[in-house]
Image (cartoon, one colour):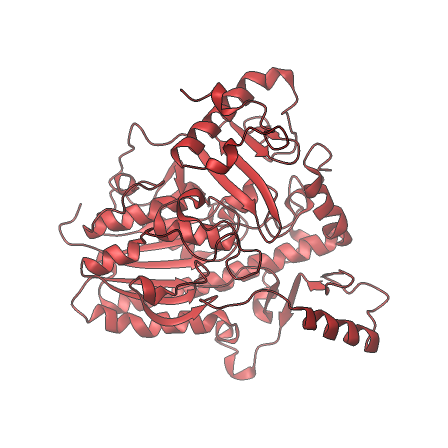
Length: 496
């Protein structure tokens, strides 16, 4: 590896699927493609939880939720914990102590007790920060009831809208006109521009400091709803967009909550609306790609691109009609867990332009950053550095499984999963389990958990789940009382 420590530029989006940065995907992202061509595309990058707060906490700490303590939304009354467990470090503290200058622009949503500045960052502008309240108080619902009386809901459901009586309807997708003065710069009309602009303005000063630096730019897109500037909404013709290959999955062999989510909400949308939503989502991804391009161009102007590690990733994915679902949450399908990961570093990557197919998780970023910075270790964590892959090396003991930990969002639900390249097992603590043969059924449409032919595979994967839970101190799974001990094979079947 190079003798000098690299600068780091992270561009993290919110709710972006990993498949949109694959070479043959119809969503065209030229700046992401440029980044991959000059660096590495990691094809099997996954989050630990398909939810903002725990996934971002994992990115910052290198630990899974059972180690850092963030399981669900930290900014609501249903938060399991509002902040990280005591004495859990973040990579930013280690880099600050080793001489890095760190600047933070964008979404935080890691803790409701701390802000980035409490962990070594200079704050440019921060969203979802400490004290954010993402909840509706009772007076809100009273006001909403009064408005509903004064202005009744339309008899016909509007295009692209999911109706939710008493909750408020959702505009799944839509577009907004661009002011004439921004005709040639439509990206400036979107709320993510403020986040990117702060990063662009900070780059020259960081580059001139004479010290290694780390700039984090975290946008809110392409998170739902997919409401974007008009030019981006017109990039793709919905009539030419096929439905997801697993759209017609009836979910009859899946947990009932999956079925309820689809039947209660998403089945309201016609197939034409599904296609239109996909077109808007791809347009949203193109908007974020334009922001990435602006950052890459600004980095080039500093003269420090060669020794800057650039990372493009996201906190989790989006269903976008897969299995007839949207957003993320309880369902444990690939579309919500697979995230993009593109890495470029001209001075430090051997054989750029290649792909790496090994499992990478958001827990692997923090140890990677501390290793490259020559900073102190984070101690016992879940992840491990992926620096060997930059050298075109694959460690012989690199994990061959990917695990998830999920305890619900605002309503609680216990779920764990383990995936290999061949199979995926999902333990649903309060519903039937799932098992998918990923080689025969890559779109996860047929649950074979009850098929006797897969009994040995299910038992093996269940054992892997228990051993990972033991290593990660995921102790809430181990209660033996018969009202909660629902795994088909208990821990004693696998441990010791």
